[in-house]
Image (tube, rainbow, N blue to C red; front, top):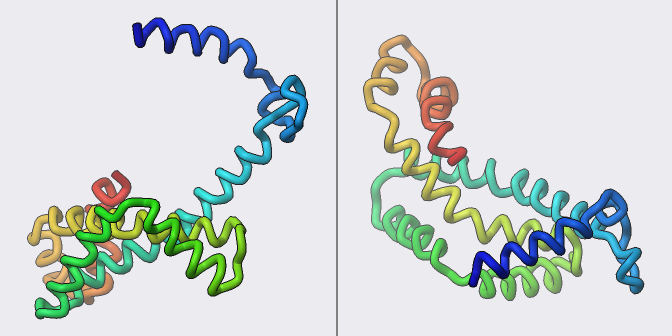
Length: 169
C-alpha cells in the first residue's frame, strides 16, 4: 500500500516539475508558482551554516583532544557537549529566536537562521571530529614528532589529513 502511494505521488509529481517550476518565483496562482527563492534561501542558509559551524567545530575538537588538559572542568565540558547533541531542535529554535533575532536584532534573516543551525550541529561536529582524531594511530604523531615537527605542524599536516575521512563523514 505504501509503494502504491509513493508511486502515485511520483507519477503525478514528477510530471509537474519543469524548468519554469524550478526557476519561477512564488505566486498566488498555482500554475505559475515556483521554488526558486526557497531553493536559493536554502542554499544560502546551508552554505553560511557550514562556513560558521565546520571551522568552529573542528577547531573546538582539536583543542579539546590535543591541547586541553584532563581536568574536572574539561570533563564537565565534554559531558555538556555530548548532552547538547540530544537537545531537541525546537529548543535551539527558541534560543536562536531570542538571542540572534531579538537580542542581536538580526530579525528573520538568513544570518540568524544560519547561526541557529550552526549551534544545532556544532555538538555533532565536535563529537564526530574528536572520534576521528582519536582513531588516528599514535605512530603517526610519534613519527611526526621524531622528524622534528611542532605540535601544530603534526596536527595540521599529519593528524587532520589522516582523520579527514572521519571528519567529513
